Image (cartoon, rainbow, N blue to C red):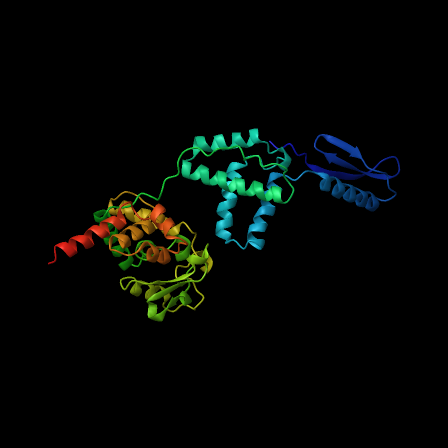
Length: 346
């Protein structure tokens, strides 16, 4: 429950001749100065209310809204990224009406224990990191004196990468996806792009007709969450006819995958389709992020360098690709195949 009282005024009331308003602050009530007219009584009440509100401590909800505006307007983060950030912060700070100064280490440790009981390490550790960034921003703005999260140690280990389909499973998945795409299912095409082009879900849903270039052989990604993500991706020949059909008779600024009212579909849409196709192919259910990882695994097992694979995927460093995307041993398998080809030529 919030410890910050709700403030408002009531009236005006005619009280023994003059007019008065009453200021209400939680359970307390105060009569304001008497005035000759109701209009003057209201003016006094509004001025008193503004002064009282200004003296109230900043609440977590107010601080979160200020932080949201900061990320959108000052940092220039993408709206979808800010939505995710706000969702994490609200799942951590469970008392939005609490004053910011009441964020103690003991209280925040309780917040984190609650997350640990409900979420996987990947999720609650990321949420704790987001909350820490928020608290440091409050300290920089002199709204907090000390970081209440400083002594909290993350619990559990984050998984490296996502579970991936095996090769035979991926072939069965692709057969089902291609059949759905040929039947005109745009979601199946989007799912295929996560695997063959290693695109993020948001990179698929926000593509326009104009982004399809050079006769449909290239796809521009002009905006991304990192500078490395701004890139041009080759469209495999098998996907080019599908994208051509999606672009047919549309204006350059129209979305390839339009959602409701002509806007882009929601970001999780490609992920839903990847999982739907997994169920239809009777293979383990994985996410769109996993398909990006499978792309990295396949590319490196074919001998592509980690640096090249990282550039294709929009990563700032091949370390990210090797640690979080490509399956362990991918590069070694390619090396073994090259050695075999050199030693045992056909």
